[in-house]
Amino acid sequence: MDRYATYQRLDLSWASDGVLKVTIDNPGRANALDAVGHAEITRIWPDAEADERVRAVLVTGAGRTFSAGGDLDWIQSLADDPQARIAGLREARELVTNLIEFTKPVVSSVRGAAVGAGLVVALLADVSVVAKNARLIDGHTRLGVTAGDHAPLVWPLLCGLAKAKYYLLTCEPLDGAEAERIGLVSLAVDEREVLEQATDIATRLAGGAPTALRWTKQALNSWLRAATPHFDAALALEFLGFAGLEVQEGIAALREKRAPTF
Image 1: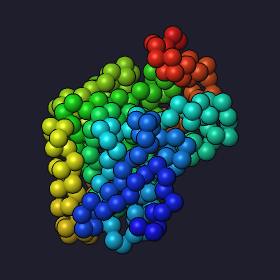
Image 2: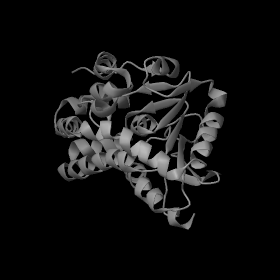
Image 3: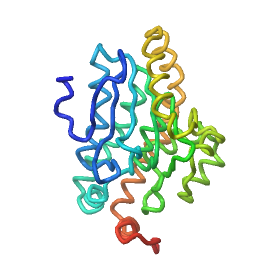
Image 4: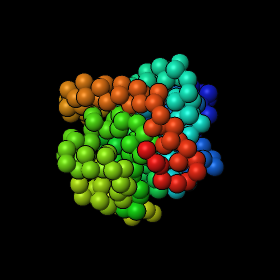
């Protein structure tokens, strides 16, 4: 695991033969992604692509939470610093494109909350296994910015435009059972079975015909590549919003644990 020795917010291990287990691990912060964590969850994909030992990836969160999304201090820096916004825009795009272009199968194992940037990884996995009682929340419009990142790229394809508009505009949380019902995730199972089932699927994929699986994934991801202009537009609008007043109120409301007043 020497090639992964510099990672601080990701715990990297082998779930089984050929399956790299990527665990988002930010103790005490519900696995929120700060500047370090966001950078690491972006660059793990080219690192794993170059590692010939890796035939599939299992991504999960430490403890009983997948990821609470972007760390508020990091989000505040995007709102306050133009240079941080420029770097953040580039990195947010790379996170999504790195996942789409990653050739090996990815399985997400989701318990607890999956929010914001954490939800990007959970939903862009090739197979998403979530707990029936998991809470999935996009959260962007409640924060005061456009629902960018992965949202316009993948939500309409997975669950249809009507459901995508409802959940992205209202920031209404949905549990894993409802997410499976509308087609947003692959499987919803009892919480105690999530990691076991996800590991089993990743292990089976790692043992499959590698070229056939990777080329099938490449062909299916053409749907996502075709939608890239929608993604680029939404991401640009999101980061334009980080320069506005609405996001300052959204951040303050989250810190003060109250409803925002826009």
